[in-house]
Image 1 (tube, rainbow, N blue to C red):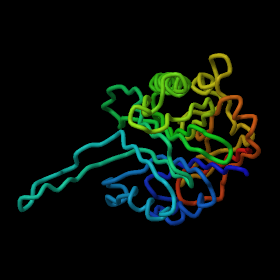
Image 2 (cartoon, one colour; image 1 turned 45 degrees about the vertical axis):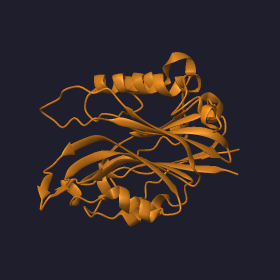
Image 3 (cartoon, rainbow, N blue to C red; image 1 turned 60 degrees about the horizontal axis):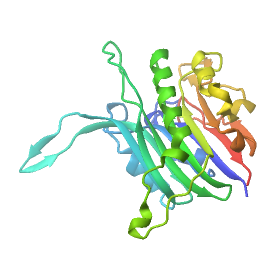
Amino acid sequence: MTVKVATYNIQFGIGFDGQYDLKRIADAVADADVIALQEVTRGFIRNAGRDMVAEIEELFADRFCAVHMPADVDFGSTVREGKAEQSRFQFGNMIISRWPLISVRRLLLPRSMRLAKLNLQRGALEAMIDTPAGVIRFYSVHLDHIDAEERHSQIDALKAVALAAPHTGLAATGLSEYGFPELPVTEDLLLLGDFNFEPDLSEYRAMLSEGGHLVDVTAADSGWSWTLPEDRSQIKRLDYGFANPELAERVTNVRIDQDAEGSDHMPVWIEIGA
């Protein structure tokens, strides 16, 4: 069986037409077995404060979901008639799977103090899943969009955790003490998401450095994955999938869905053979 994977930066649900429409986003990736999403929000002014997590979970009611909101800021919480009412802006990533999530971790990536322009706490959401193609660690990743130096530090931190995971353990070890089986150990991993760099930049080379530990499995389709809605002649390649070499050998197909209209990014698809 082939496992279909999609990564999609969904730009807080707003598409080319400026309209919020999660249904068309869900429809674009509904055939995927594992989905990595970026720019999922709660309480954001750009989409009228929608709870995208709740809406996405409803649209994928028969799937297993994990969410990580590394940026979480109070936007006017108060106490009304003796009851606390929270108003928070949250920004982060999701993973959606046809199969249970064996282990989940939420990783914070390095950031710097930038005041002139928005700098959100970035993160990577890790989920280990037992798929028909084997046990694989999937990561939904979103790196900084402005500062190359910051992206380099985020890449170093991300790779350090992801590559060491089989040797350091995931969410828990020693589970046998309480009668539960130990988590599987696997080298197979797939880093998915909006990395905010193009293939000719040093950040891209940094992802592939250190003895060939990672392979850009999405290089088979060298097309663009982002465009400016106001001027579609402006295009960039920002979204990728990076795998360990053994898993990369089992990737059978890659494509970018440039017909999708639900975001300024395009879904990137990866198929993995058993």
